[in-house]
Amino acid sequence: MSAAKSMAPSDDFIFRDGFGDRLLVRDAQGRSTHECLLIRPELFSVPAFEFALNERLWQLEKFDHPAFLTIQNIVRSPGRLASVSLVYDYTGGLRLSDVLSRAASDGQPITAGATVFVLKEVLDALAELHRLSGDLAHGAIAPERIVLADAKVRISDYVLGPAIEQLRFTTERYWKELRVAVPPAAGGARLDSRVDVAQAALIGVAMFAGRPLRDTEHLGDLGDVLMSISVPQPIRSWLLRALHMDPRRLFVHAGEASQALTDAMNEAGVRPSPRDLDMQQSRSLKIAAPKPPAPKPAAAAPPGPPAVKIATQPRPPKQDVWQAHDVDPRVYAPQGSTTVRDRTPMSSTWKRLLLAAVVVVLMTAAFTASQFIPAPDWLFGNTGTLVIESSPDGVRVSVNGTPQGVTPLTLEVESGIHEVELQGPGKPKIFKVHVTRGDRVAQYIEFLGRR
Image (tube, rainbow, N blue to C red):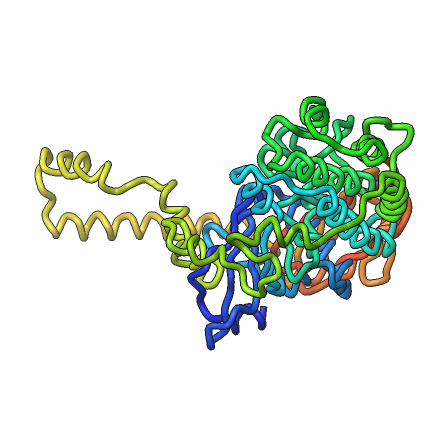
């Protein structure tokens, strides 16, 4: 929060995708310092979304790799319509989705060398993430989340996977709304390391096709686009395996997929070529440029300024959003005034007498109720309620190092921050939760080992 408060307002709108608006944040001297993702309210309104996001942020608190855009803060702005933002280090560059759009509009195909370069960079970066833990995966690899800068590949949004799982979308909706590729599977989406490999391979399909994939071209329906692309046979075989076309031969993690891609490249005689990407955009956009040219034209667009104000000064724009759903007083004002004019005006004396009578009735009712209804405990206590549920049930729960029972579990705890540990299948889940006086906080944990 301290870093976010020190940022000066910005007028630069960078990019918009299914997760929300990307905003460029400047310091007091006008220098670009951070990139902010303002998450769509429809996403974090799902109860378990924000909890899963916080848990993954806590797990990756010390993760710092040059191939990933480091997340510095999560900022929650309270209000009638709250907002949640992720603050990243700013790196400049160009989104891969923009490269694909320009290639499609210009009719300039992307070379095989450029494609395998991006694939190798993405897979090698994911391999570092997968090595941290068997449960860690990105979950949302797509051209919209790949930034090309200084002839290097940078990956963003590496903490959103577990939160996305909580949305329980269909395969088609994940792809159409969020551009998150999910293989069809029973029991809901599981965005693990195998899915990371499939999502990376889907980037390769789009680059070989030389255009962004359409809404209908998700992991369950790729037949037409795969038939349309010209790819060396060893690399095509790798794509089919990575895209889960053969469930018996899936890549377990990105490291295995990267090694297999290297073997396929050697067999096909294809070499990674980052310069081909520079040539693709040399006429208008320089991929190695430290400052992206995209924000300037986007800033003049009508939706630009309101989106940036939301990131740096959240309250006024947020007011505009929720007021749009409230009743417009102009609609009902004429009806109310007509009704009043049709009645005989009430004198001020009668109004005062009526108001006094109402106050006496309310005070009498309150006094009578107090004789029979005891005051609630939260009015004088200093405790709150903590509810812990899990899938599967029966998981042992410890709070602040003290065993408390098994899930589902409801506890009365002192207000403050408590450390909760769940000993379920696989690796224990440890997280911190803040309970305020009189509040009821519910947490749901899902252990992947029993799926």
